[in-house]
Length: 524
DNA sequence: AAAAAAT
Image (tube, rainbow, N blue to C red):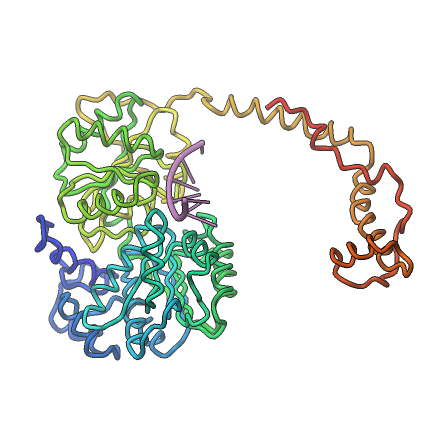
């Protein structure tokens, strides 16, 4: 999204506060070579939006937003989407991914009008914030078109959303939960939805949304065009793509800039009780424009944010337990520059695109190493130098090692003046407590299972046996009328299926419920 | 362990 991003920052700054317009590559497109000077001849060689086949109203909106050159994923994906092809995009936020589907979708949809309750296109996003971001994109690029959109997300009045749906929308942007909810209440028909976007598929997977997504895709016509985006192509994601897409054009774009070259990192080991003070020192020491501070827990977000405000910082909280209206207004205030510090959970670790972020602070070391990469990836975009500092406590060596192993390089240790720097502790720490319960589990598991009277092999065969015998009964010509009726209602068919195994004569002990669960001592 | 998403 470098073209989009770099020009969106000044656009915002015009509205509100000062975003540093220091970017060397202000008009930059291909982020692959950030060191190259913005040479005039080179610029000529870059593709132009006007060559992509978008119609006048859309082109005009692009012009007005100050973009001339598409990013690599935009240049590659837009023509294929316009052709009606499915697209599999391996790209993350920061590459211009969103516009690579919103622009051609607007083009395709601009031909006709929506009908009541039947959205013509659907975009699935993992978080509400991302859904809002996509909606903004539609508003911006679609301002010279008469297309309607609806944002279908949780935490907001359903009545209003239903109202909009009833009038008919061209674009439906949704998080999975609310969409399914509304569908099940009958407020929505997806049979006419011929364009589908599944965004951030890898994150949907992490968040356990895939069953929901499968359900939603099942509501759509198989005669649809699908665009599927993911930052990674793990085997599981590949499997999903194969399931949802037909003959897709696969487009892979690399990260806008390598993390290493544009992000200056640092890590300080401090006492847990000193973390808030250490963070304040860091915040005051750095020439910070705006910063995100990540915490691992929602309640720590609240506590830390309050503390920062008390110490005179311009800070606002963001996590999933806050009211939706507050989530959006806080994010807006941060984007506009009104708020300098966003204290948040991992809700904002991925995807959210905030231009010109100068600093990221990890108040806690993230539990998963990949989250570290996602978190610090919020800064150092578009060729600018970003800063990412992490506070660790002495017992978090393992977490930090995991990060350093993943990124392939150590995080330079830093000292914070006035705060004592500690060493990693060599105490076995929490592992002790866990080993205790593990031992308990290991010792408990085999013994009670052997205590179950029937050997497992027999017990498993015993399960289908009663069903078979009942089925055989139902097939009996002169069976009792009541049981015949009941059985014919319960059992699918094949009354003449041959009786196997024990037939009607099932030994009584085998019909007893299996007991092994109750045998395991409940001492946890 | 935590976070996200439906009420």
